[in-house]
Image (tube, rainbow, N blue to C red; front, side):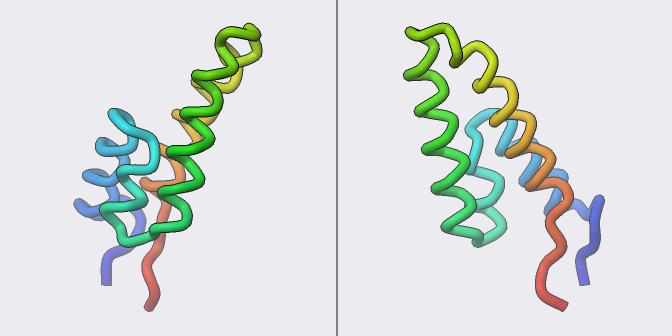
Length: 74
C-alpha cells in the first residue's frame, strides 16, 4: 500500500510540476488529469486578459499538491 509521500506520489508531483495533469495521469486518474491540464491551458489563455497571471501559478501548485497527496484505493 502506497501512502502519502511514497515514491510514486513524489514522481507524480514532479510530473505535475512540468505539465499540470501529468502527475494525475501517471497515477491513473484520467478525469483529474484532464481537469488540471485544461484549467492550466485556459489560465494561460487568460494571460492575455491579465487574470491568467494569477490563475497560472494557482493551478500549477494545486496540480502538484493534489498529485503529492493522493492516496490510492486501499
